[in-house]
Image 1 (tube, rainbow, N blue to C red):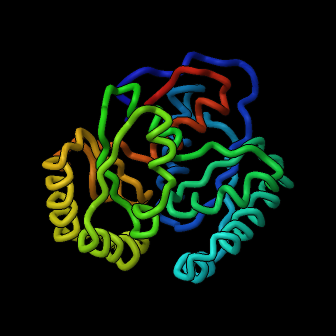
Image 2 (image 1 turned 90 degrees about the vertical axis):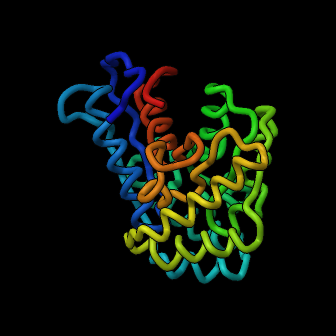
Length: 247
């Protein structure tokens, strides 16, 4: 349920959103958010046209585990071309980790992309946060996907330590991508977020698109920046051609 600003009515046909998906759970949450919140923008039961494509998650994981971002990018490009062929106007990827491949993808992409970390960084700056805790897969947390975008907005960040990264990575890959939700996983995230708070974080980026399955403002020691829903709402804004909307 959106609790703040609602998009104004817009009479033109919304753009067609293409979702380059990686894991099913994160993509499903992004898709549902676009469709359910689209009704508040465009009227009862209405939302922009949305198409999703994803290869087997195992194909992505094979190349992610090897750190081969060019191969990851090829998978993303294959999805991009299929989505372009069926009429998508722009692309989003509800997976933070594989944004590491975007530098290989964007120069060859048939369509423009909305970058998940840029969306999160923009929202963090709008809300007046100064230093963000960053949680997600081990690869994402160790990458420059978020640091670059945060720095451009004058924002600092704190990473989990090596042990915490491994713990969260295991929860994501062994549980959350399968839709498995355990109280122990919630408690582990809470401990990590408390430590990030102790090191100066004033909000936390849920930098895995499955993390909102278990964490939100109601149980987090810090305010959360839900990358999955923020990306979906940014796609809605772009699709209807409005600078205002849910956040």
